[in-house]
Image (cartoon, rainbow, N blue to C red):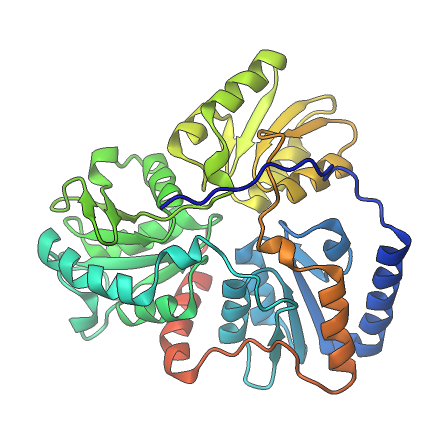
Length: 384
């Protein structure tokens, strides 16, 4: 599968607002004040500044899922993408309403693993890898005993609610880029020393995390729906689903080499959704929150190249004028689906909430909420 992003000529470092944009921003603040404590706005790091300025909390998917779970607000407006809002709905009470400003804001990576594909692969993988299904145990999440070997599913937060439900019912767990190592350690304990983890949908996060934990690349075969395995399944430790982020896939070792030629003392930090060759060529890698903290810790005057979504890079450059900060790919576009959350859409849903409507509500059906909640709560119970 190939997903391409167009190159952009827009200057994302320019965060000034036009008169029309300022009027929308002013109206959003009026509506926020009118709704008061009944409203919580969550903003992901990849949102544009004209959205972030209205967020009560800015963070990565792990932090925002925690904030949703902790909130008592009646209306939670999630300025992110569909799977994030689904997770917020699962973690909040039935009395709370989760709203997505634009219902078209999805995620191409999440779409690379569907429930029918995973269910079809699951039975084949169990047979070919010679592993057992945790769902057949009295406690699917029990630590594996001597001689037991299971296939434990781990899904990245970037997945649909029905996949989280599948994972929850089969003794698995959700992870984010900020807690993936801790989650894999948890899963390995339940898989057993001869068991394995099925990691989906992002192959790169799984491969980079496994590599950082000392797992050999030949023990991490890739599974492609409709094609099968690239590598040996028997004896493997992490079976990687062939999914990827179309933004992070564009960052390359050649871009890092070019940056180092221009800035020999420069520092490169990338997201672990990048290919392993890019991660290994960088100085550091981590979640969006990790990248923020990393940049803050660098000395004044540092030259820093960042391999992640351009809106976040532009924001960090604006927040740290004493440092030279650039995106590894100077012509990359923003995440196209995150960019669908426009201030006008945010204003519209707030207007309708004030008018007594329930616009763009994200509701996960009860039949898949239970398993999804198990998988998410397991994640939230584990320290990074």
